[in-house]
Image 1 (spheres, rainbow, N blue to C red):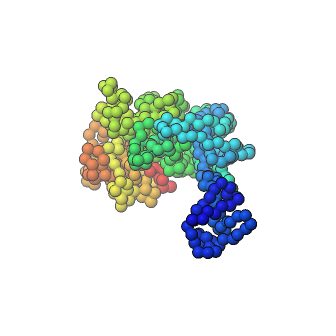
Image 2 (cartoon, rainbow, N blue to C red):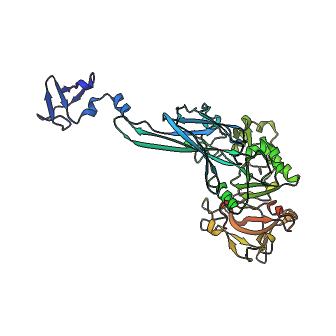
Length: 480
């Protein structure tokens, strides 16, 4: 074998098998120069591997999170950002009917890449603060999206070209003067489906299908605001309703917010509640407050807030591993609220329950369903002005019934469904329309007409409409 060397390759050498005269083993014509032999077109073989790797472009990324999920005007937002780019830019927008960009970095900010801890999903990232932004006093209550952007020109010698990357995080601003501009408070839920770092509270999206039992807020988020709450917010704003905002953890750690409002809204996918969250809301209701559950699978799992609200824990079906299980006091067991050890089913709050209902157009159940409610009592004042008649369906175009749904036991008489037993004795609970779903409770797989929309029987105060408890999931896509 012959050794071909190049002055540019210095100490490196490449060995080729013998080849026909005048031709290199790689099929490239050799050219002879005084004092050296080189192979045209074989330069890649002549460069050290490390040098070749450095010639290319590293992966470009940027991601981050806010130091808290919820702030008040005047607070300082801390943004924790990791990026492979030397610089990045950032903008903050209030989301609603139309995004309003309220703040931008005046110039690119120095970027830095930070290590990802092994237990980042459960314990957080602990990245340093990259940027601080003080919330002006005139910023409205709402959901603020932080858009992070970075760019570069690729590798030095190869893999060149303009590259751009973008990601988002968020924070919520609650009102500096709660209840002054509106008497409606929208409460947002976050975090449980976020599998950043490897695990969430679900196995299906965990690394290796591992289900986590603790999730941290101190990591890049995976917001579901655009799926659930934003369509509702846009509908409300189009129809002249002004909303104030809070997150579920505010209901636990800042419960005094509630007393300034007449109505609290639960929208979309409000599945995980801690005991203090529920305690404070039930106290609000007893004091005369009103609550509307424009959601399904509501208050299904009990969670426990930890680290001052920076993380939450839920052992779910592995409740026997909850540290509270051996104590014998199971009131705070992080499992189903309807679990026989917890003894506090959610229908005591909402009037309906996921385990008494189930799936519609999801999980292979009613996949050909209409996604609509069928009207049973069109004379109820909730339907005033709609023109709907008994037997009419509404909401199918927008799949107002779908995914995970809440309901209760129903009885049928002359084609009209009612709520039987002690539930029907409640003067403030009446079934006005329903939709079929597949039950997931004690008799899974059996089909029932259980998804129900409830409303109080009398006109009373207008706010009463929102006091009890529609059992539906996709209210955000309610037709105009």
